[in-house]
Length: 429
Ligand SMILES: NC(=O)c1ccc[n+]([C@@H]2O[C@H](COP(=O)([O-])OP(=O)(O)OC[C@H]3O[C@@H](n4cnc5c(N)ncnc54)[C@H](O)[C@@H]3O)[C@@H](O)[C@H]2O)c1
Image 1 (cartoon, rainbow, N blue to C red):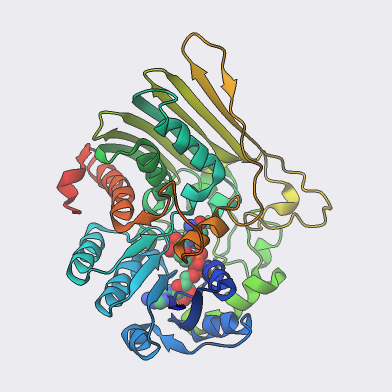
Image 2 (image 1 turned 180 degrees about the horizontal axis):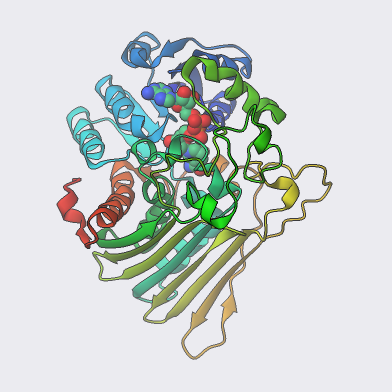
């Protein structure tokens, strides 16, 4: 039987779900909901046949009138909890983008609504579906390094991708929870899943070092508020030119007169309340520990993971791009490098097992599938829409969403107080 899907939040990320639903024989798209009528019309224009659209305040009406079975939530992070609870109360299941929500109250409201209604929430942690991350999970589950004592994990966002969090709603912690919730939530979820653990205590130290008003100190700042219409932004490598990209123009520039959402703010303009450089120390319920660092202003993009165990050590290095080409500065991650037939940016992946008293062994990795996030997006939507099986238990539940959030929220609290935070004191569960 076809399940009926409605979607709230018709921005950029919505398209991945819309395409998967419209291509699936087991799913039917029945309606859109958003605060911005123009963005819903743009998405409808991409469909073979438009679906009904509803204002954000009419979400419950939409779910009832369109007889939705499942709500997809791809709106601004801080709005997730309200939409999820409304859908659960309406008898729907929910697939939500990460983070599940941005604060402890929202998390408790979601878990309570699940208990009350018996409905399900899946969190779209697509990084679990990356074949390299699946390989790490399998190796650790097979005991390749024995019992795990500690993890060292460093994630670098380059000055193209990292900068994008400082151009729009993410730059306000009230919207996104900051990068420890919005971005590192992916990484904290991976570690929970890889190790089969839950965080117990978290200490964090972080700051806004590069973006915002620091741009003056480092010599990058230009005097303008937003790029569109600002001569000072013309040759700024940090500027995103919405008018040059038909998709960005239609989704954001042509829609902004309705809600004043400027997608192209100056990353060095005042008003940033999130951090761009964060160090986190986590103790897990198994006794394992993690040292983690997220940097959002790196010259190259990728990550390094090291897992120390009772039988050896596993090391993963992924370089997604070794530099940001000058011709691609001011574009978005994954965008074509303008005027180049060949992308000058290079990457590599290396997974190495170091057993005790043996030479290191490089682990064969599956070739990178095509598609969003290293093929992870397509693999995830196939499982979430019920057209593929999930033997590795990659699909994340609301509890998984809460556990990923637990590390980020505890880290944020630690930033605020300067002290370690016991996860149980957040009273999420
Ligand atoms: N897993 C991933 O790899 C990944 C990648 C990108 C984005 N995301 C997630 O997807 C979500 C959307 O991100 P995006 O980049 O598409 O953002 P976006 O700004 O392009 O879209 C957000 C949409 O939400 C709408 N909106 C704002 N307030 C609303 C409300 N109260 N009710 C209904 N709609 C509202 C906006 O009008 C906009 O259309 C976020 O939660 C983000 O974390 C996940």
